[in-house]
Image 1 (cartoon, rainbow, N blue to C red):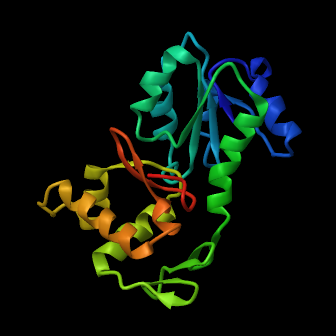
Image 2 (cartoon, rainbow, N blue to C red; image 1 turned 180 degrees about the vertical axis):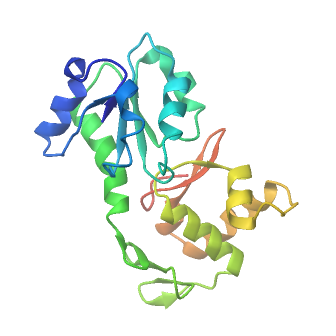
Length: 220
């Protein structure tokens, strides 16, 4: 966990520890170079009301190898709008802090990440075989095109992290692809249709940003 103030001033640390989670508090000024050395499952960024959200999130995101690590940001009401516009943010908790809520928001990406097993991603009856390029639901193959599979695989491999359409185009289709962002929307609709209920809900829409991978039937 990273706090922009002194770790001893953060009530988030106590809430997470009381829930049985392993927490390593760090001040932002000391933590950026240490984040991935510790290889956290989730980064929790506690931002005081008097600090700007975007520069702090960007400082954390700039740390080596943080891509794919869920980032939960705790902000006050004044920082909510700014945090909502940062695609790197996985989830937000709004102050005043409710311990049960912050624990639930931190556990959520942990639950998704724990479903990865070797070369497969498991979500209930949905199995994504990363090497075999096959997805099945309750043992029945899903008829996905190569690009549909690539898009679903990429999102599922980065659970909880929101990506813009342009980011998905460059990561999944490649930098030399000249199609528009509508291509992503079309493929998302097709993937959802083929997954059906409840797994269509894994591909979630993030308003004003793009898409992310979440739990089944969470909306989107």
